Amino acid sequence: MRSAAIVFLLVSVCLLSPGCTSYQPPNAGAGKPTLTAGTGNEAHTTPSSPAEWVASDNGDLSLRLRVKSTRIAAKDSIFVIAEIRNNRSGPVTILRPCGDYYSAVAGQIKIWNQDQQIKYTGPKYDYELTAEAFVTLEANKIVTDTLELPVRNFAGSDKAGAYLVRYDYTYSGDWDDTVAKKGVKGIWHGAMCSREVSLQKE
Image (cartoon, rainbow, N blue to C red; front, side):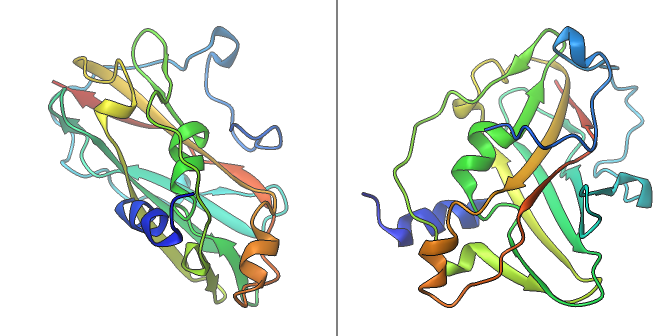
C-alpha cells in the first residue's frame, strides 16, 4: 500500500454519482454536450460569476468549477479550479474539492471533446486519505483547490479543438472511519454537479 504521505502529495498537486442530479448537460441523451469553438476573444482566465455556483440538493453547499486558462496548447494539461462554499449558518466539515485526487480524476471529473467523452486512462492507486484531505468551513466561507488533468492520464485529450469539463463532486462517507481516528468527524455527505466550463486546445 502506498503511504498516506505519497497520496497527500498527489492530492496537493491538485465514479460518477447516481445522486448527482443538480445539473444535466445539453444533449445528455446523446452522450455529450454541445460544443462551441472559441472565437479568439476569450479572456485568459474564465471570469467569475454568481451564476456559476450550483447548490447541492439540500442547499448546504455550492460548487463552482473554472478553468485556469481557456486557450492552451493541445499537448498541455488542463487545469481546473474547483471551489466549494458553505451555505449553512454554521460550520461544516467536507472533503476538499481535490481531497480525494484519484476519485476526482478517475470518475468525478468529466471531459468531452467535439466527438466523445474523454475518460481517465491513467494508473490505479491503492491509497488512504489523511485528515488533510478534509476541511471545516465556517459559514459562507469558500475552499479552493486546483486540479491538474494531464494528457498522459486522459488518452485523446491531446487533440486540438473545443473541450468541456464538468465536476460531479460526491462524498458518501467512504473514509469516515479512517479519518475519525485522526479527529475528523461529522463530515458532510452528498453530491453536486458543477456547470460545464469550456476551453480551446490549439
